[in-house]
Length: 312
Length: 259
Image (cartoon, rainbow over all chains, first blue to last red):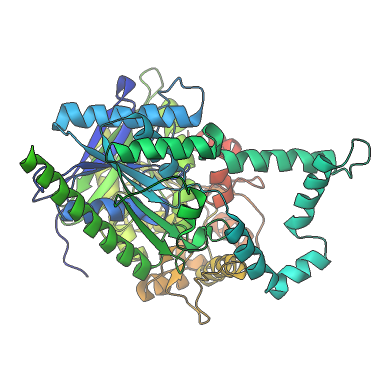
């Protein structure tokens, strides 16, 4: 049994009617001037994070001097439905801002880093686009668009597998479905091969689910580039991790730069490519490695904040 | 709903207490024991809904996380079924202190049902009803089932996680230590013998040979047994979580069955 350091964690409630619930991990020895970190739900998984990722992040960063809040967005986990926003993304940004308001008022926090996995990463970036209190984001497998090179890598990897050919020959491969969709778009009406209605409905739902929570829902790629330029311009720092769990979309280290060629990230992006781990960074070795890298990055943010204070 | 920590400083546990609705008749108290690993994350939403419905009908309810899981202290690779039963015992005492009820209904889902049944046997005087939701009755078969699911994922993954040898060090994203493996593999129907409580409720989402044997064994032992089987009421499956579904048929039957 490992020797356990007693945790310093507090249950917190905030937002409309104190309906949002979270857990604040506090450091035993706080780093002076360190920003507060706020972690946002990955999809519908409650605040502990997929395979307990957020608990590990919160306790690791707290052990190094940074306070971390993991909380449940409206309607998720142990939070009530408090938002009247019309979309999940708008509600998430409002809830994130409610968390920042709470930490400002109750803990006198001034600066924040917001982060998460998957949809949590997307919502974090959206919040950073609109809230100047956010100085940095932790983005683990955020939504990204494919590039020509990433498509080529993906397809060639798939074609190298016997399983793929077996599915193609049995007409079970999803490529058949996509081909039919493409044909429906390009062929004149009346000559379009038709999917059964039930299958077409399912396909529509699947496509909508793929888009939910992604930048595609709210922004075009040009808008994302513009918003990123603005955020970087005001000093927002990005810690971005891409895992093997999204290798169908992101599969070479510098894909981010090919996706957004008009964005100069300056020295404000720390890009980590971890193709050997899964989407939730589940295996012990990869998780330990990512936590170490994240911890080091956070230490640099704290040092930079201290330097800025001194200069001011 | 009151979220709080309890237990000792070294073994801090997370709990969520749902107070009974003021207008409802007093019905006692209910402790919910969650499942393990990948099933824990998927089931959280449904267990919260079950707790809420039980509270609405008049129960004091406590949900909690075992040591090394959820928001409780401890690392992912700490704990086994024996330590879970100890944690459930601490939670039982906490709920008794909060509610003032001397006999508690103990719910358990999947491996949580194993912990619930062992708790009932060791604390017979404190447990009124045992409620089992798709209990794991064959630990070796359960691990093989999860391992098959892992292998299916790995078939298409560039980052396969399942070791060639069995048991793997990690299963569906959760560390599987030798201690945990051994404690799960030892789970058999015998786990549910002589529960020490006269009332047992069993909810099953599908017909499996082990489940029928379990019900037969419980009937033969003279317990007041009620069972229900409804296909597809499987909140521990990831796809149920991702679809945002709560299996309401199961939740409503369980609430009614313990009144």
